Amino acid sequence: MRLFSSEVLIQARAASVWHVITDGGNFGVWESGILEADGAVRAGDTVRITPSGGRRSVKLRVRQVSGNVMTWHRRLPFGLWSRTRTFTLTPQSRQTRLTVVEKHRGLLLPFSKHASADLFLDRFTDAVRRRSEILDRATPETRLMQHR
Image (cartoon, rainbow, N blue to C red; front, side, top):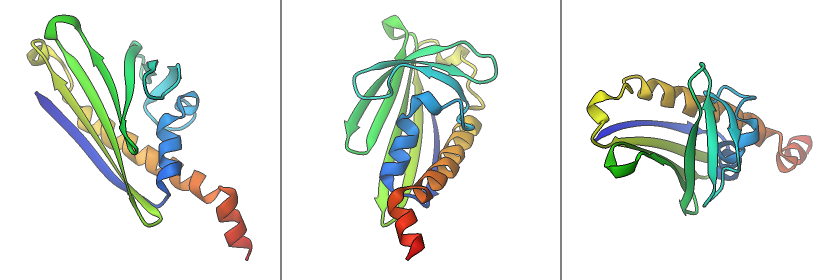
């Protein structure tokens, strides 16, 4: 098994962060590393993700494990290879800790090229942080508080 992870503290509410990581229609708008997502990013659905950089698209199964935990899963048959990306949001007052862990397993693992997965995850979590903080400031609740 290979394990990659990234963690960031976001100055935004968990609801804003959750909105960013489940709003597949806008993945291509911000620097998510994903060119487009075809399908809904919600529990039980399958979404086709096209990574930026010309790599081919992949189908992922989305599962919401609990309130603030979601997984994206892809696998090849017969235990040849699987990848699970787990998103965990931990609310802390008006901040949210986002942890993203990616696990790669299977018989083909020694032949896979995922040496830069940590770098991609770090870029992704940083981009989620930036977008969430911008969107959280733009909520109606926040704008009312700023005008008082």
